[in-house]
Length: 381
Image (cartoon, rainbow, N blue to C red; front, side, top):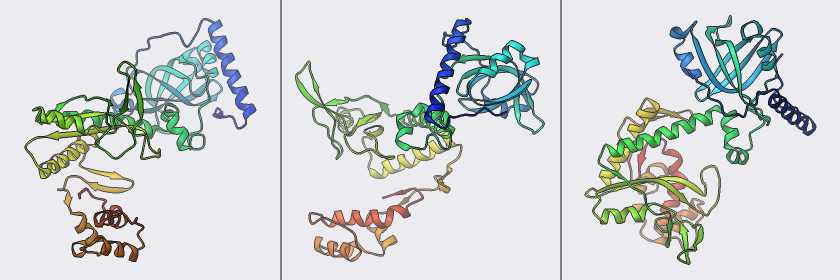
């Protein structure tokens, strides 16, 4: 019988939470407090067992993770344990773990952290699993996990409770792991090319380097109003002036503005500067960096994003904004001489603009309207 994951009403939820706390109290009373600090030696992650099944079949392994499902069937049960690298099915039989341990296991709840020791095997249906010889409760879950597809779909809630998002949406965990690898490889790439990583002030008297509203605070010791930085640019440029020829920083910046899936009040920014080169040299460096990261993190310079194949192995295209607009909108702004002519074109093409806008502003509006959606493959503008 598959265990029901989530209660459907507020009353059911209250009852489930009460029962879980009663289970915890009973565990403590029985001398089995799951919140005591315990060392549990893990030998493998789930993905490693699946990848190396031929070598591990019939051998003992030890895994640990969160129990995401459980099916109790009399004298034997199945559960799925989710760890850092995926999940694996565990077969728990009364005769193998012992009657007392099996009784304890049947009281475990979805969301509990457990450790499983046992032999690797395949079920009759061909699923790689662990035949448990011992199951240990490592930590008790007192809250109910939301259903994967129904209980945590609110974007705001997902971002505010990332820890729950990580539990019920494994692809989010993959993103976290990949992000960590990307930052590591950025450092490896730049360090290997003679760049120096530095740290610059976060509290500044003048937040420059970008067009954004800063957060403001007060420095009590100096009785001075200061701002949180909105970019990394200005201090890095001062280091170039001071004689450091190649510098970069990976750090948090803060912008007191709107929030959506692409904008956050605080986020990580990477900026680099080097002396004795031009923007062609910077384009070559950037192209090499992206190709290197794709190969190191994804294993190939050809990647797929949203179902579209992105080829980072080829030289990146290079276009001016005017050339791009001419290509995708059929308008040659090199022939437009005045702001008034540019505004007339915008009006003709139903592009909203403000009276203060210049020809340059109108070019940017045309680029956003006609070109950005077309630039799928890597392109320098």
